[in-house]
Structure formats: C-alpha cells, structure tokens
Length: 501
Image 1: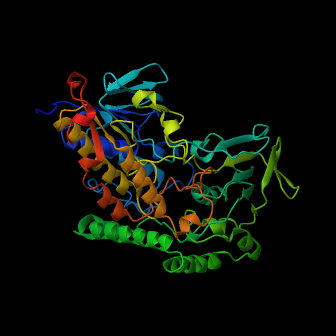
Image 2 (image 1 turned 135 degrees about the horizontal axis):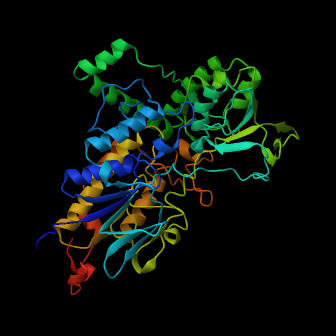
C-alpha cells in the first residue's frame, strides 16, 4: 500500500499549543498546515492579557519550548510582553508566522461523512477544508463573569482583567476588584499605589508561596548565557520542584502537610494585620485550589488605601456593590478579576462529527477525551490542552509538546497507511476516563469546590491527576490498536473495520 503524499491540517488557535503543533508537524514533513486565530496577532492568552503586573507563575526556564530555549530571560517568571515576544520569535524562527490567519473567528467545524474531511467555518463566511483538525484554543481564553444581580446597572466604568482598558486611568479613583485569583494577585499590587481607594472583594482565600520575581542581576544573566549546562540544570531543577508540588497535592495527609506548613509560615510573616489575616486565611486543604505565588499581594492588602471585603456580593448598584452585610460600597470603577470559563474549552464553537453528532452532546455529562486529545466519533480531531491535561504544579508547555508529538504520530499513521482518518475506539476512551477519575481519589483536588471541577457532576475535568513525567510516558508512543482507521472515500469497498490496525 502506497502512503499518501499530502495531508492537510487546520489548527484553531495560535497560542503555545497551535504554534508548537505546527512546528512539530512541519519538522516531520506535514507541511500543509493552516492556523486560524481569532485575534489580530498570534500569541493566545499572552496577546489578550495585558493587565499591569501580568506574568507567568511558572519559571521561564520551564515555561518555554524544550527545542527553543533562551538564555536571556530577564527574571525567574517572565512578564507578559517577554513571553509574547518569545512565542512570536519562535514562530518566526520556524517559519510558522506566515501560516497564521489572524482575525479569523471560527464558529463551526464539521466532519463530512462523504468526503471524510473537516470543514472549518469562520464568522465572516470563509471556510477551510482539511484532512485533520487540531483545536488548540486551550482552557483559559474565555473571560468569566459572576452571576450577580444588577451587573449591567453599574453607572461607572467596568472591565475584565483579561480585557484591560488601558485608556481608563485609575489614578485617584475608587476602584473595586472582584476576585482574588491568579490574575488579581498580580495586578492588585501593581495598581494599589496608584488608585485613591481600592476595595478587594474575596470569595475564598488562597494558599500562597513566595515569589519576589526580581530582575536577574547582571552576573547571573552572564552565567546563564556563557556557562554550558547552567540553563539545562535550571530547567531540570524547576521541573522537579514542580513535580514535588504535585506530590504534595496527590498526598495531602503526608507530603501535603509540608506544603501547608511552608505556606502557613510565609503567610503569617506577611500578614501582620490580624483582621486581614483572618479574612485571607484559607479554610480548605492545601492544593485543592490553585496555589498562588506572590510576595507582594498580601502586603498590598494591608495598605492604608486598600480594604479587603469577604462578605458576599448580593447586587451591583448604579454606584457600587452591595454586600450581604447590608453595606453598599460606592466605587468609580469595577475590575472583574474573575478568571475564565475553564470548563467550556472550545465552546461556543460548534463541532460535529460522524452522523452529525455534536461534541456538545457527547460532552453533556462533562468533557472527556482519551489522553485529553481524542473523542470517539470525531475522526482525526485532536484537542490540545483538552480535558484532564491541565497542571497544578508544572508547565502546560511541557504537556503541549508531548501532545504535539503524539498528534504527529497519529497523522503520520494516517498518511502512511493511506487512509482518510483515525478515531479512538469508544471503549478505550471510556476506560481511560474511568481510570483518570479514579486517580483523583484521596488527593487534595477533591477536597473543595474549584474551577477544576464540573459544577453539575463534580468531576475534575481540567487537571491531569498525576505527574508531568507520567503524562509524557502515556503519550510517548501511539498505540494503533486503540484506534479505528477510516478508509478513504475511493476505497469504500473496504469499510473502516476491514482495515487492519
């Protein structure tokens, strides 16, 4: 059997996942790759999020492609612009930028049972056809707003932290920040010295670990740049530190106590104000929610012009926010630091597979996918940063690289076997989902409500339940026996089940 000479691939999303997948495919001879990006520039979350203090909380030595290491990071955890410059530079270096179609808002992806190809449609009426589809929209790209009465009644100015309004000057204003998650922890210390009065509304406190994140001194930059092996050692050290954090989350009664003790000591040192300490102190197991890294946020909450409110917001009024204790907090500006719709994945994009089956219907009881990437009845559809592939301790780029290599193996199989597509067998995906959910038992992840879990079912549908190295091992080699190969239309005499795996 002669393999196919060409294989076309459409990628939705030009963040780290989409760019990394395109590079991996190009390296191995799959060159007909088109990347569709809704924004005006590539960069994904690092293009959209530009709030003051925006940075990654994973050290840059690990939050970067293994094949495109840099020796000139400015600090341990790089700021937004530096990460964006890095990603755009890598795309240029590997000749990927020209394959990105920006300003393309994908609304639907449809599998055609007759042609056995995918059609991708954009809001402006354009469409693309390809043999395979990679959805690389990720988990953290759709801003979320709380369900609070009167949210549209506010007469002042409001915006989400992921859509920061840089034209709106905060100096001297009365500003409300709703939310104390990872984004707020970064921008609150940045804006606190500027505003007149800052009121921070907290739903639940967080466990914190230190991160001063000062710029590297010149001698250390020189060391990274000139001494062989230092950069490699630094990446390895950060990797194993991240794996240790996962160890603490997986074993809350033993190793988790170490993390809790370290966090508690740090927080008590930072929280000199006993009332702020009382409000901030978390009442759940260390690691159940995302552990936050900051040496500045807790200090900012104790500034003279900052007030922390832990009473629930019951309504938004034209002049401010009304809390459960009956107090109305008058403000000029509301900043929603309320995170993202983490469990919506690519929705509201419509994706339909075999026999017109909707992915939304397939995921009615919560998103699930084999190895977080493939779903039965959706041939040659691959989801990057999909269900159960988030990390609480490591670098998502590590996962994305592993996924890109796995997807490349799948598409090489399609090409070399001269078939139309491949689809994971339903029983394989179902067994994997059961096994994945079972691994959460006894871990910190199940000891509170968090954005990791589906509201309706309580299932953890975002996180990988183990270590980075375990996921890399699981996806290292594609097992052909776990897939069905689907014949090309011209080979209809042979049905899918006739094609040996």
